Image (cartoon, rainbow, N blue to C red; front, side):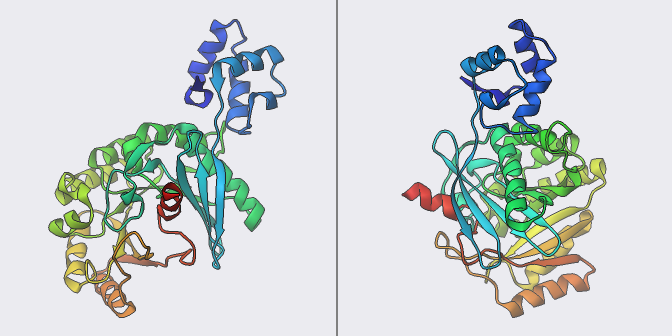
Length: 345
């Protein structure tokens, strides 16, 4: 049977009318599914029992479940989540002084194969459904209130998977997250991160012009980027730049580049020079990310002196640069680590 949360409100209304139920009941059911995120049909207390039985006999209602929680000394919390078919994904809650951010997944595994990423070693399994993406945000908000005493502040789609290769479900889930029928979260508090799927970036500009866009760049040298990010072979830096120019033209938003410093790989002054040149094409800010070392790769974090020299060069060129310290280093916080361990078990 189909998961009822794969149905749009229009589709659900049509189904109820065809089964001689009042059309207004669809909005009631929809509110139970999303705004209240009920675990089962029996919890829909203002719905007639005959309708609840009809839904139960013709649909499933599948939710993401917490399998494991890891708590870091910096208070970050990583969750291993089990899906209805036994697969696993990850979600991370990251508190700071003035906000709580959740990092959510969009796919089981990932097809990008980035050599520094633990998720990349898993390969691609499947896309997450609309409900599975929404569940992570809803669950994160409840966990944030329970553990940090505040509502969820921000959502970043930077977990397992390439969200632009699941753009239809990601878009549908975000529409509900930002809707009054769902969580009514402001789109400006949501950021999507991509490895650089050019056509997906253009599509995103049309579908979600108010959310933030972050691009995992990691090198502005084509040959070097191809070595660490296989997608660069088909999605060249030139092609990516064209997509980002289009994105800025449509949304008028500044783009974020994520740049993971890898010792001896992409952290030289020449790397910084090429990055500065590439960034002249559109308004950007650069997040320099410290590498979260893990057993799945051979890469190591750049030394502080090298990192400071790299950032100093960019700042001299009037680039907007921020250092993003890794969190959860004492737990399996690198993307894919926890799910990888579970899959091997």
